[in-house]
Image 1 (cartoon, helix red, strand yellow):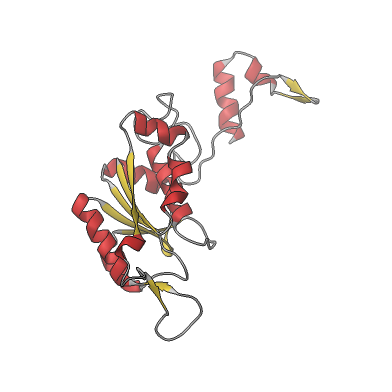
Image 2 (cartoon, helix red, strand yellow):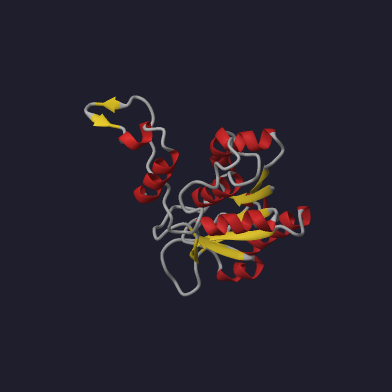
Length: 213
């Protein structure tokens, strides 16, 4: 999977996307990404990308023209890529959405808003809108990272175990939670690992895990 990211702050992604499982996925040619600086598509000698909103109001909005030009450039690289916009107006993003995006096997273009938002006309160039939660962030970069991480880890071969991505929270549905887990030592400051997990009785352990969810 390849992800093109349109952003005013490309450097924000380097630490996240070049570490841990995301780096492993790149080394195994399972995932790649490219950063498109929205400023490159700004207007005039100052490369302007924002302006005051019609009708008044505080703050600045991203202008439609630079956004569309950046999306069109990304589409030229990959005409079949799915364009995603992180926005409070979007559908709440869930594990089932990450799974669907993996199953669709399409590359992605993620547009990262900034300032007070964006010119609403941009949605005519967007395929899907997602909201990562009912709270406000300073831009779309963190939601983009969240979505990329949640998607890439589901690509076959990224995680270690064959069923690592199957037996975990939200995989059965968007409400299921993985069972509680423990490791050594057996006793830590008078807190014991449940006896059933030390018993070796696999059926009892499986039943306990179902009950502990």
